[in-house]
Structure formats: structure tokens, C-alpha cells
Image 1 (cartoon, rainbow, N blue to C red):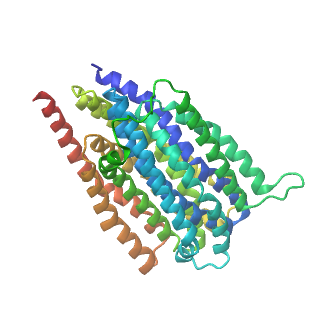
Image 2 (cartoon, rainbow, N blue to C red):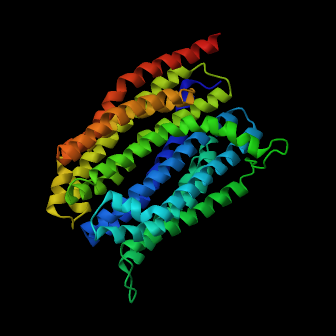
Image 3 (spheres, rainbow, N blue to C red):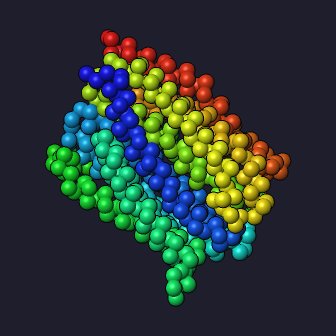
Length: 447
């Protein structure tokens, strides 16, 4: 029976690869943004719009993956290879079907979607070009995300990390050459960034496929006595509320970004440059929270919750300290923007400085909610977490942001301030329900 300290150590062995996995997921946008920035504000704006749409779809796929991840953790904890295989194949069908649907939407309605976001005639064709290539990433990532969820749920978080370590340098090198050219090759500009990312994602998918094929401890042969068509429905019903929690946040983040697109060009470019760093930085407390949820899921599968309260308290405390470290890194980032992006316009730099205090504080006010939300999901309270996110984001923060930007012509500071405000509104409810349901789980064990 593992003690709380042993569970924390186990959590740490899963969390640090998860953190770097998540960080490198964002590397595609970070690399593209960094390499495209010298091409000028128009290229960055096109990248911002297209990458926002792609990030939303990837968010949906990651949401499904997080649902699969907890099911895999429960099956792994109970040592059931049969349930493990069912979770994998059901998740694969659900995620690939979702990616095909979004791919068709981007193929058929790409121009309509882009023109609904911007009416800049020069910006539209550049965005269409980038999107016409990167839309294929959503198909490949549907598979890689299920592979990643399976490995993470089994506690093998280092394997997906190795895949991203292969992808990162390939993405950077190929994108640089395709954007800027080499020798007699002139380069493709923004289009080159899209091709570099797509090639790198395909290579990562091949690596993960090889990992699963050669791992003798994981048997993914589908059980002959269970029909897949009969299992997808029940599996979906378990995945759906877990995925919906992540989906609401992903859609909300996309709408925030689309609202920011209504600001002046320099303000939107400022947020486009900063957002990948925010996503990357907040992945560290996010990954600690996900590792905590996996640990709790595996514990529930083992039917051993004796040290649950101690583990939850320690995990929450460590997660908050991680968020403070991220905030300190963001302070350094705010001071280093002129060095990182030396060619940006002064108006863009001023806009970044205007919101520096907000994005520095964001990881701290968001961390507790992330940790508590993941703990509640692992305890089977995904619908409750969904309600908290939906009410605070969709009924309060997003409408306020829309009113401020569209009707009151507010500055970038007040528009961006709605994101940390949303997190502040959630803290009380997550604190209250986390305490209640952890206590309830302990009482069930005693009975």
C-alpha cells in the first residue's frame, strides 16, 4: 500500500515528462511564431488566425485524449489488459472520427471561416495558404494523441516525451530552411512554416507507432468476446464529460483570441506573440495536475484510497509552487521581448508591456483551479467541473470581454484582463468542492 510520499514521488516521475510533453506540443506554434516574426506583422497575423483554428481542433483531440487517459489509468490500476485495449481502440475511433469531421469543415468552409474573422484583403490569402497545409496536422495528431494517452495512463510518460524530442529539432530545422531558403532555394515564407510542422508531426506519429508495436508489456489485441461497436457507446459516455471539461476551455480560449483579433493590428500581433509562451508556461502546473489525476485514477482502480487526503494536499501545495516558478519566468520573458523579437514594431512592443502584469499573474491564479479540476475529474465529478468552467467563462468572462472590445472599444489591457478575472471567479468553487469530494471518497473507504 503506497504512502502519500511514495505517491508524490511516483507523481513526479510522471509529471516532469508530461510537462515537457505539453511544452513541446506548443513548440510547433512557438517555432513558427519565432521564425515567421521577421517576415512582418501581416505574416504573424496570418499565422495567428490559422494557428488559433488549428489549436482549437487540437484542443478537442487533446480533450478526448485526456478522457481516454483516465480510463486507461483505471484499467492499468486494475491490471486489466482487456479494458486497456478497449479504452485504446474506442478512443482511437472517437478521436479519428472527430478529426475527419474538422478536416472536412476546414476544407469546405476555410474561406468563410477566415473572412468571418478578418476583412483584411491582404491577410486572407496568406492565412488560407498556411491553413491549407496545417489542416493535415489534425488528422495525424488524432492518432498520436491516443497513443500518448495510452502511454501516459500506463505511467510511461517518457515515451511521448522522446517523440517530441525528435520532432522539435526536425521542426525547427526544416521550417527554417523552407521559410528562408538556403543557397539557391528562395524559401516559401509562411507556407514553409506550415510544411515544416506537418513533416515533423508525421515523424513523431511514426515513432509512437513503433513504440507501441515493440512494447511487450502492452497488449492492444482487441478481445474477441467484445464487439467494438457495442463498446464505443459506453466508452464515449465516460470520455464525454471528461473531454467536455477540456473542450469548454479550448473553445473559450479560441473565442478570446478571436475577440482579440478585433483589436488594432498591433495589439492582436502582441497577443499572438505572447499566447504561445503563456500556453507553454502554464503547461507545467497543468501537467502536474494531470499526473495527479492519473495517480488518483490508478489508485481508484486498485481500490486503495487510504492516503488520498494527504496526497491531494501535497499535490496541491507543490502545484502552487510550480506556478510561482512559472510567474518568475514570465517576468524574465516580459523583460526579454525586445531581444526575442528584435524586429517587431514599437506599437507591438508597447502593447506587450501593457499586459505584462496580467500574463505574469495568470499562472498563479489559474494553477489552483487546474489542480482541483483534475482531482475532481479523477473522482468522477467531471460534470461539476464543467458547470464551473461554463458559468464563469461563458456566462461571465467572455460576455464581458466581448462588450469591452466590441462595444466599448476598450484597450488591450482591459480585454486581456478578463482571462485572469475568470480564474479568480473559479477559486472559491473549486476549493469548496475539492474538499467535499475528497472527504466523501475517504468516507466511502471507511464504510
